[in-house]
Image (cartoon, rainbow, N blue to C red; front, side, top):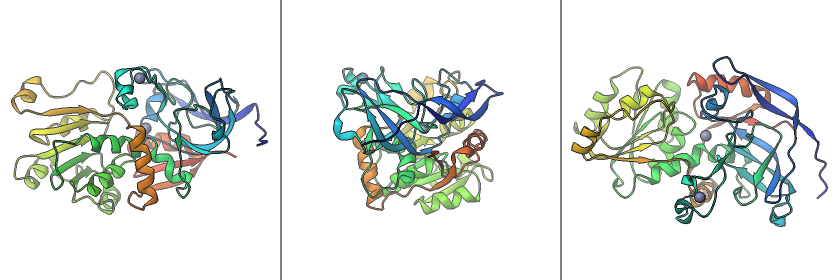
Amino acid sequence: MAVEIPTKQTAAWIKNPGPDYELLIRNDIDVGVPSPQEILVKLEYSGICHSDCHNVIGQGKYTDIPGHEGVGIVVQLGSEADPNLLGKRVGIKWQWSNCKTCAACKKGQHNHCPNQGNTGRTVRGTLQQYILARADCVTMIPEGVPSEVAAPLLCAGLSLAGAVSRLEPEVKPGEWVAIVGAGGGLGHIGVQIASNKGYKVIAIDGGEEKKKLCKDMGAETFVDFTKVDVVETVKSLTDDEGAHAVICVAGSEKAYEQAVMLVRNTGVFVVVGLPPLTFMFPMSPLPIANRGLIIKGSSVGTNEQMDDLLQQVLAGKITPRIEVYDFEDSPKIIAELLRYEVTGRKVVKAPQ
Ligand SMILES: [Zn+2]
Ligand SMILES: [Zn+2]
């Protein structure tokens, strides 16, 4: 396949990561050359995730180009990459690489590999025209799933498929699952996944737009934290006991402080949203012990969960709410995410 690959490309580049950051659209960023196990992907679409805010505000060690939900076509192969990949449509996830030899990898839970590389963290992210990826870590996108629909599944969808799977074996269909931050890019897909599995979802978020989205996705009820006392409302819905499980998708400290109040004794609390590293879990070990709470961490999901999710999209069971924007809108979208203003998922079209 003769594809002309330029040496320079357009990308969204972070100047001065921190509170005074600027996200600039630059046309002079080098196009990478794949090393033996890598491939070069010409991106078509990229979702923008709340976690990309960590890059721009400099919360930890990240690269100068954010983005970790990209879909595109393989245009160049490293010398050891599978030749069948050339010309294929693939997805680039948060997990860029894994070691395949640690205990987590051997269990098939590559998403918890301690030696993983991450898109946008250890290598430049998907907000560029061309991205380098590991040939063994990309996801094949099935024909019939549009690239702009597949993009937000690669982090947002997968993260909630992973989180909802953590409810098992303790939480049974028909039981209450509260999702905190239910109307955002991750949350709304989680509402649908959990509802499809038969859980009764209490969607917690703010505003009419998010309420409508959560109801459309199958939530049993919506609790608007801007209007009512969330703890009281959830208790009243659940015989005063609290939800059987809580999935905290929101990444703010305030959200966590409230979320831990919503789970019943012997219930499950799933940690998904990512507050700053300085923030500690807001509950003393004493009530955790006395109440028999089960606290589980969840970060993205497994490759099997990813493939299953794409099949569910093909079957019309999962329908992420997306809006497509121009690449130049990326800085504006990041600013909106920082203010928690985005309902559903905003996806940008890569410059062609
Ligand atoms: Zn993400
Ligand atoms: Zn590993």
